Image (cartoon, rainbow, N blue to C red; front, top):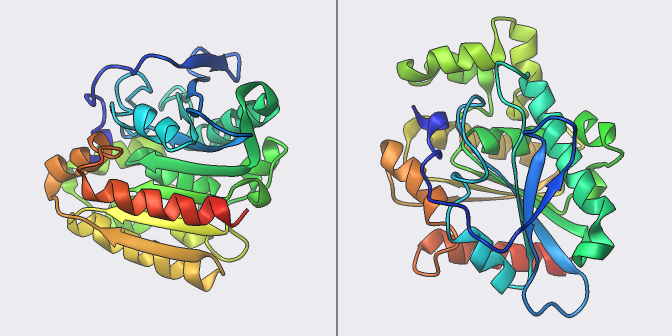
Length: 275
């Protein structure tokens, strides 16, 4: 049940500041300030997974990210968002954008450079950040645009093309997909980053995945669509199979001994230095 993974990634890392970005209790985020920053710091915003129905910033962020990225000189935020069935996937994507807006509005006080923001998400969170990075209406609804986002890092998602995943994805996930995306083919297409990737999009993407066949398939197709839409795309594949690999790439990202960490670090340095 891949997109439900991520609910056991360890306890919340201390040292954050809590921000509410809406009236719902789930519209909240934690932000860790950059360490030893000389001037406004770039920001990485993480969106947890959990099948659009589960998960929390408090237990699905992983223990390395909130330590590693501030240590690299970046602010790091991890958000909660409203969950299905109490909210729609459309509202979840709007929550991602609203959370970014709340951070932008507090940029001076938090020491954040609002011109250098990267979205990062795992599993269902990978789908949400990819959707926000390909369908500008979510950012526009928060008074932002693709120009507000330096790049997007979807981590081991597998619902970038919703109709394809509902046709070919794991049988065990089909009930989760039906609850999230419904039965209307037009809505399924609208919620598919791959099918929304005609220009314009966020300018840069780093697609990370392990060796799950549907995740590989979906990342390849998304990368091709984004490239055709004019975005600069890098894709990186790492060892790991099934649910174990799917969970590990989120749990260990930010661990200096874990290979994807160096890949992300190098990409972030390039993306942030270009702005």
